[in-house]
Length: 210
Image (spheres, rainbow, N blue to C red):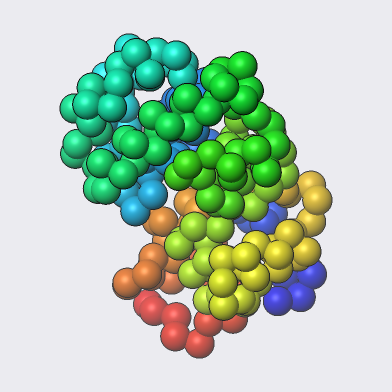
């Protein structure tokens, strides 16, 4: 995709939704981190349903450790892979207290050293909590970037590098949110809504529908 098309693509997404927000509910960087860890292979809607009562009681790593593993499981048992996720959240809470005075670090390496925190999760936290211009590549962004020709790659890391190189600086603060939302609701895996797509004419996909 040419630089002009890339700029047009983000300009249209920006005009449609000037200030996109994460669809995960949270109250501070710590609860955001917990929500993102829980969201792996789960829907934001399902995570929000589980965390609504949890975050009324737990807003800090200290409170999470007080709740304990079994107590946490009671809140998140509706979420897939909840046993492993709950164990990771308890351990990362302990490490936040031990290594970072109970605060979520604004540092990729430190974040990725926490249990259950991969590159995508770290990127989301750095962008949403701290306003850093990161590019979180989930399944939606990976599909959209490859399908449209915006940034083709065989791995999320390849796509992330391509998006960081292609995306104009002025769009970086919100770029991954626009792409996630467009992939989630328009450029879906099955039956993409090409007829409703505001960037259809910029897209290089040969199998457009509608």
